[in-house]
Structure formats: structure tokens, C-alpha cells
Length: 346
Image (cartoon, rainbow, N blue to C red; front, side, top):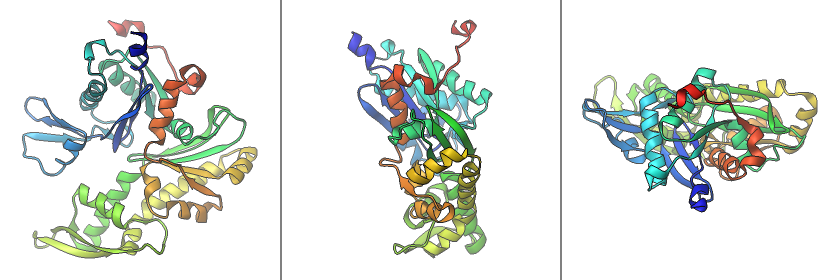
């Protein structure tokens, strides 16, 4: 029974784009898009994750497809709770026994109210205790950085809803900046540019596809062209347009500039001793945005610092939070704790 008990502690990377669930002793068992489809009238759950994501922009009016997290924070509390419950049940077949300790990752710029909402969602979904860890800290641990040493580690985590930039030393965040410009904003920038330049309306999924196939942050040899389909705003009919990597780079310029700027501002606020460490060790890039071609080159070019992409950028945060679950006692100091008010336990 004790062993079963050990396996129940979990870490959740509650991301705007994807939610990952790490189970103690087992690793990442769930990696699904943060999308929920519910019945508009009854509120019943229709689909969660990948299945729900495929319904985006394709549903009849009696089904609502919701992305419960916007810009890294909970926008729809009920949908978040449904999603968490579903993922916890996926991992724990014997549901009635499962009362896991839960470590949840949140953006560093989150307010106290937003933090409470995350904890509450965890408790409502059946957790025994909920601990919070800041995303850049989890990303740094997951990327294998020596966060407890007296050296400066800089991590840039470009997620779906937020870009987290932080300098970490001695197990704490020395300086950090969280900007709500990340993967989703890049998709929106592509859709807006297409509307303006080609009078073509793109869906959310198509804009993301364009970013993945053609998107880049810095000119390189791998520049390509592709045919993009959407709806013509003038005639209202389907139409296709030929696009190049350079076009998409132009579309992404503004949000990319915001991300680069966040890195610059954080470097500017870093104590000189730690800035020297970062010059030696470099900046570590994690999150889904780290997969954007040439983003490391662009940051290297703009800051003059060495930039490395983490080994598994998509899972860095989940793996770091997972380490907090595995080595709970050793890593307890990185968790943001506050006792839950006893009056709420009833």
C-alpha cells in the first residue's frame, strides 16, 4: 500500500497550449492540448485534450470548445477543473483512493488571486495538498541547471501564453519578467498579417501550422515556401496564397521583438556578478517557442550572449516540476507555499 501511495504524487504543468502531468516514479504520463469541449446546454464533458483540439473551429453550435487557460492563467475556472479532474482520473484508475499531493506550475508574473484560483482548481479536482512552483524555476530544474549553486543561471521559457525570463541563483529567482507574448501571440500575428496583406482569413489551427512549417526568427538556409489556404475576405470564397519564410518572419517581427526586449530588460536588471556568470554559461531556451527556427540565433545576435536550447524544451517545465515531486524534501524551498485556510477544508 505504501508503494501505491508514493505513486500518487503528481506535478502538473498547466500550460496555455498543453497540459503535462508527471507522476512520481513514472514520469510524464499525460501530454495533451489544454482544450476542453463541453455541451453548451448541459455542461457535460464531450472531449478533452487532442480530441477536443481537433474540434476547434469545426463544431456545431451546441458544442463549445474552450481553451480554459489564456496568457498562462485560468480564464475559465469550471473548464480548468474539469480538465484537471479528467487528467488525474486518467492517471489514477482507482479514483476513490487518489488524493495526490499536487505541484502545479504557474507563470512568475501571476497575481495572488490567480494563484489562489490555480490552488482551488487543484483542490476541487481532488488533491490532498497543492504546491505552487514558478515556471522559470521548474524550467531551469528540468533543463538540468544547477539552481542551488551561487552562480547565475538564465532561463527563457517561451510557452503558449507567456514568455518567462528569469535569472536564478541559490535556489531562488533573483530577477524575472513575465510577458504575455508567446506562441499564441505569434499565431495571432500571422493571422493578422495575412488579413492585412492578402485579405485572407486564417483559422487558429492553420495559423499555428504556418508558424511551425514556415516560421523563423532569423534568416537561414532552411527558408522555404508553401501554399496556405484560407477564406478570401473580399469574395468570401476559399482561396490559397503562396507564402515564403521571409513573409512569415515579417509577420512575426513585432511579437519577437517583445520577447527579445524582455530578455534585454532582464539582463539589464541582473546584478553584475550574475551577469558575468551568464556571459560564461549562456542563456537556456525552453518551452514550445524554443522550437521556432532561428530563435536561439536571434537572441545570440541581439544580446551577444551564448544561447543553448534545452534538451527537451517542450517538457522542461513538467520534468522540473516532476523533480520537485521526486525530491520533495530537497527541493521544497523552491515551492511557493502558503497554508490553506482550515475553514475551507469542509
